[in-house]
Length: 244
Image 1 (cartoon, rainbow, N blue to C red):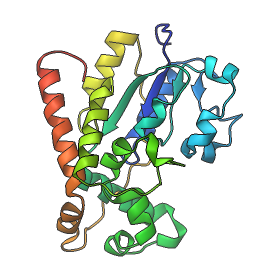
Image 2 (image 1 turned 60 degrees about the vertical axis):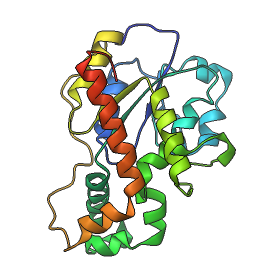
Image 3 (image 1 turned 90 degrees about the vertical axis):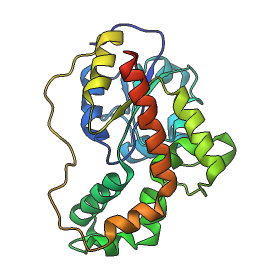
């Protein structure tokens, strides 16, 4: 179990960044009922996605919560009754989208066995779950009057800068291709332990349609710029021996 702290933790869980696997570690480091959402109590779909559902919990429920997880924009963490210790995991944007497309192909009935480039062309899923998705999660702010992380916003240069400001406010940042630094930070600072857990939602290898990676790269320039800035920050702070 983690070391006691007056602050709850808030995991900014970005889809297809190894977050589902890491989330198991969050549950494993706290007592039953201390991590939101509580599987035996909450409506898991709304608990994982609805900002109103998250913020609508009772004062007593919030007081008993030591960690929050779910698919929420960063700004939701700043709307809680108590200021949390925030952490997140980021992934190369092109790899993240390709992983999402593979996941959709095998888990979405409407996308079953479709070529990945055709799934990429699905306008609803593209806007909600793929297009500049990571930077969107951090670019959203209170004025957007958000319902969930699936809301669509126009990510322009100003939004990228907002996302970078918000990322600088995140206490600890990890990366899918190097989670060891984040794990060590959580162990050193908060006494977390990391036992072996199964990898969740890991996709099998797929052959990519010709040109798909290039399309994704062009379409998600804002996400790539955000990610590269995040990696530069990670490099500086890991080299200096501090938590990202």
